[in-house]
Image (cartoon, rainbow, N blue to C red; front, top):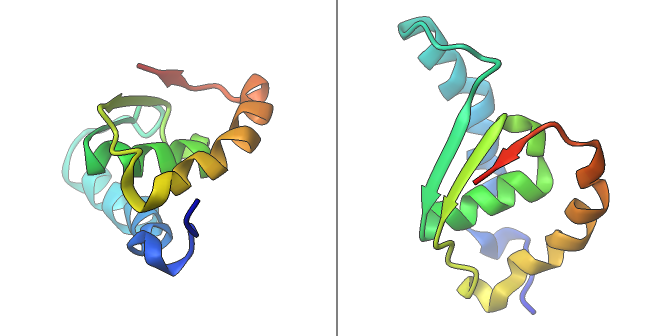
Length: 96
C-alpha cells in the first residue's frame, strides 16, 4: 500500500482549511447550524470524505460518501480504517 503522507494531495491542509476558514465564513454568511454539518463527497471527494471520517470524525456530524475512489494511491486510505473502526464506538456521527 502507498504512503498517506505528502503524496496524498495535501489533504491534511485542506481539512484544516475547511475547519478553520471555510466553516467560519459559511457561518458568518448564512444561518448555518454548526452542530448539524454534513459532508458530501463523490469519487475523489468521497475519498477525501473517508480521510476526514477516518482521521477526524468530529469534523462533521454526518457523512454522505458516494463511490469513493478507494483505488487511488494504492488504496492507502485503507491503512487508516482499522484505527477508525476501533474508535467508532465512541463517535457520535451518522454515516450514509
